[in-house]
Image (cartoon, rainbow, N blue to C red; front, side, top):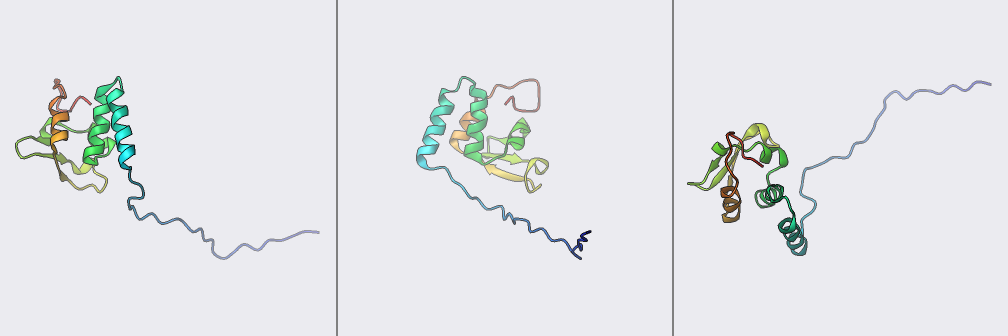
Length: 116
């Protein structure tokens, strides 16, 4: 006995739609614990990268590609270059007092990039 299966004329696979909305936020207690953990970390350079991500909303790739020319301490903003932005558009990110303090303490090297 042989069984023949008829193939469907059209295959359809439903995919989840991602609307890119924020789905989670840290609570005040979680932020407090995160900052305490960063303060206690032995590698304060990497802790500063995490602080910058937290305070600016910048992604890892954008942070690691920051150049000194992207920082405008006089006007108080960070240039997010389009090639490193999620939406591929350049933007100016406000430099808060905390962010400014972090950036001012990063040692300069013989490189256009921040030594993060």
